[in-house]
Length: 507
Ligand code: GLN
Picture 1 (cartoon, helix red, strand yellow):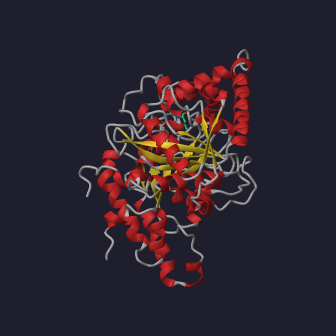
Picture 2 (cartoon, rainbow, N blue to C red):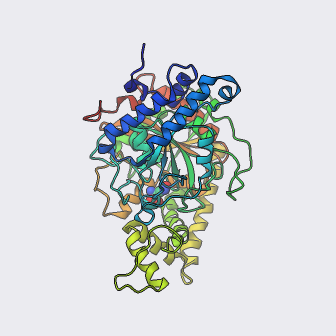
Picture 3 (cartoon, rainbow, N blue to C red):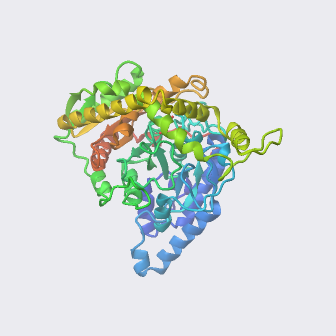
């Protein structure tokens, strides 16, 4: 039987890798099939800001040549070698533009690779290109990109989540089997939830942040975006590990995540339902799917307990002080002097203050400016204690809530996002409504704990995500629980991604 490219792109990354190893397909054919898909459908999705066809095919050809030659080099290829990947355009890549979704970095080429990119190149995964995002990763819908919104492949009149909507939509639309995202407050997990894909935010420090353009350094983490839990585990293993270039990087061996994802026995696993992350504000369809998932896990032998995390009610408020404070400092470097866009004031005055002012006025979008102003205010002399100081105290209380919850439960569970994908434009003029999308994902960033979103069925024909959280350094547990739920839900239904409507005009 010959595998047509159409069925090829619908395999999981692990299945693609197995076919490559068995010599049933070549990486060039696999990579070309994804590039063709991008050509066919990305006009409707706008997941990609840059497609690097030539570079991807060159890497693919290199992998094929190594396999054809055989011997040690072929034996030692990384298990995912030859499987293509897309990269969120917040992660710097040598030889390809990096924009952060901002006019500020239009046309900017990084002189170096992020550590995760170095690892991906060493493992020889063809890089398909860079994916769209809310400007500097600030947003929950990818509508704040300076390069136009990304659309949700489930319904192109709806948002794909954010800020990593490009990576999630690319994976959901079969334009890439694997992608990288960054998660500061939910930007991997929430897009995963609303596009029916899998997304992991690793333990803070487990994946190097070197080369991820910083939004809020104490919260940012790079992580995998995939269609299956096993694929997320495989990609996580590839990108994790100690990096001396990131001072917050954990100096510990990388656990066997893929092995954890293969253990889908949840008998005796204590799963804590977070009292604060359900009920008011959550759509009834989302809660129905959530309760069904709990039921399935209970039937499979998991012990479901309720946990109380009272400080989570203040997580969103604390996040929207800490994140803008750190961002206001991190984004100070975009000044029209060091790199990126430079705008000369209209009257031609060339003082450094005027050039910086004109550059930042023209280069940053509205949401980025809103957060810089908010962060600068929160850090200002008279208000530091009242705002930033209080937010840091709440952060500590949230960490304590997690500690207490993990005494009673091995993993915690909640809906990933309170709603399914909403129509484009619906929340664009209402920042607070937009911020509420991350109410369930933000606590994990404030505490540094790992989290995963796995598809949990449909509501009104649109994907619902289920989130698992585990203690710091126990990422293996979210893979075990996530893979278990994935398997249980597939006992009586096709995987969610297999049910995605065909994109019109696509072959
Ligand atoms: N939506 C959140 C925000 O706008 C999360 C962003 C992120 O995780 N990068 O801050």
